[in-house]
Image (tube, rainbow, N blue to C red):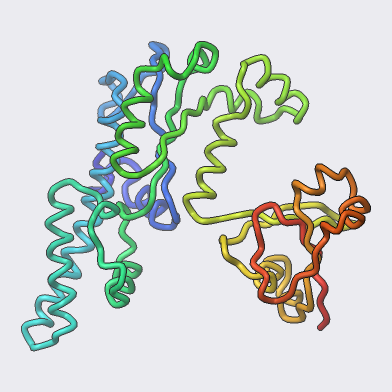
Amino acid sequence: KGASQGAGLGNKFLGHIRECDAIVHVVRCFDDDNIIHVVEDVNKPESVDPIRDIDAIDLELILADLEVVNNRLGRQQKAAKTGNKAAAAEAGWLAELASWLEGGKPARSFDFDEGDDAQKAVRKELGLLSAKPVIYACNVGEDDLMEGIENNKYVPLVAARAKEENAQAIPICAKTEEDIAGSTQEEKIAFLQEMGIESTGLDKLIKASYELLGLISFLTDGKKECRAWTIKRGTKAPQAAGKIHSDIERGFLRAEIASYKDLMECGSYTTVREKGLLRVEGKDYIIQDGDIAYFRFNV
């Protein structure tokens, strides 16, 4: 609280958010008398209230945006007085946006004109913090995982707030994630089975983040390494190859594609080939999530 006025991390906090494509807002959703919940005064412990905490952060983002919008609005209003029609049009919707923000509502819920290219350009230049898409990560206690998230009284409150914003709320236990962070895959599986859960909150959060940003992963399997590459959904094969190396994109010839699902079911590349599941695709092929790609190129 108070970051927009320089309190706490102030501009550093807001600057970090400005560089992000989306916000994962971690909200405390557990009670523990041994962990003080501080909002403003370190000498004044506060009760756990996730909605209050969300509002506190949202307000800082909104206030920072309001300052940016008002500064631009003032310049465009002056330009409009000289007869500049483009400036007048921009000042019109900026004034509406300023009023929206003054009402304590984030820019992501404002009714922007998605068909107005000039407005899109200005929005990009403004870099509005409260316009960024958000996922709420409900930080729950270990007991909630054992006894069932449905018994947590705070998660439904955050979920309802997220629904209002067409966002997702994902329960995640930071303590549990910390405990299994250094575990092997086998230890992780055994731990999850013992806890009675199928996947960690972090796994769900990563998946939700990819969906929110329109990202997918494709795989490459070479002699040196097997790894995943992150690309935007809808990326064509040559541009996907460029994520590995610009030379591969420049000299792209074709891509040999198998799906991860088919490889797991078949057990080997040999069986994938025998069943005719290995495809040769050209420059217009759009890479799909889970594709295993071998790129042929010549430079």
